[in-house]
Length: 159
Image (tube, rainbow, N blue to C red; front, side, top):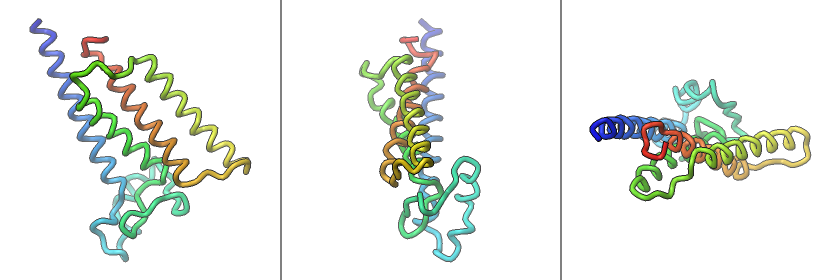
């Protein structure tokens, strides 16, 4: 019983770190629009930080308070929903409503495939995706990624 208690405490700390870290990444992905002077926005560190994971194409990015977000519309969906998944896990931890690991992996794979398909048909000029279609697919992928991570928690009683 004592070992289970220690493992549960470790699990709670890891989940808290994931929740705080993902929330910070989601807030930083909004970019410098809420506090930076317009003339300094292109030189802000938000853009250089996210440049290694996102193309940051201005024509594919939302604006936040007059400044381009630090990531594109798909990536803001991924970061925001990834953080939301950890918040939902924290809120619903006492209820047994969280999907199991296999279902979460299937849904994560489905959204990864849909994103790949969306990129492909857009590149072939079959269909032109929009800010909102990219955002929606990003939200699905980000949410399923956090659901998979929390479902894959080796310290939980369901594992």
